[in-house]
Image (cartoon, rainbow, N blue to C red; front, side, top):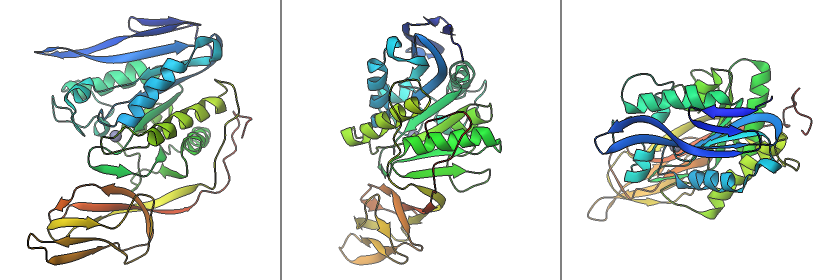
Length: 341
Ligand SMILES: [Zn+2]
């Protein structure tokens, strides 16, 4: 696809140029609410790919990855264009707020496609209508949020359109170190309706969810998963030099479930993300304030620990571990559009 000039309001990048600027979304009494946008428009034609991070703006590994990748990309070495929003929710970023906007209490990734309601709904609408809409491919980068330690994975919401779904699965396979989640409508698997990538796929954009990192940390190993995954996708789309590499055997989620505390007190965890857990395995012990053990927390089914909460004090109903149930993902999907698979 040709992209002679890419313009998002007054942020314009001619072919072979880079542009940076802010989109105005609205204002608070303290000043404007803005979204930072970077456009790197390559010298040669090719796909338009969009990266968004900081939808949850205390998920720092993906934010760092997008900032790093965009500062390294040059128009001379790029076919097509990349549009990036390194921090979608600047209010969360500034205030170090996890999960929801400090302005209206909404979770941006549960209200897509947004609308004309409060500021988060406007923000999601502008992001989808004016930024992501310029692209054929989109990656929304996330991590576990505060208190969440997360096993990396990539997810795509199946549309029923065979060609799109093959590309969507291909992008998840190119991003993930091992685990993919391909969701059907009404599924227990992400991405869910209300998420930005789910809304984007319903508009014909091949959009995936990419997850690595968590718990408010900025660890190089987690950043690398994002950077390597995005570069792999760009190689596959022939936007940059080099061949994509798909690592070892991949696994596909079939279901997932949370194991919760029944009793309250101090939680002594005995599980880490990525651990294979057996049915009935003890993953934690809860003791009351007198130090007496009141519960041994056990998982019901054999699976892989995909999210471990870092909280040490629990109440009845608090989550302890979320396990994935998986099957081998099989061979890499063939596509009509790509030749390097
Ligand atoms: Zn997130």
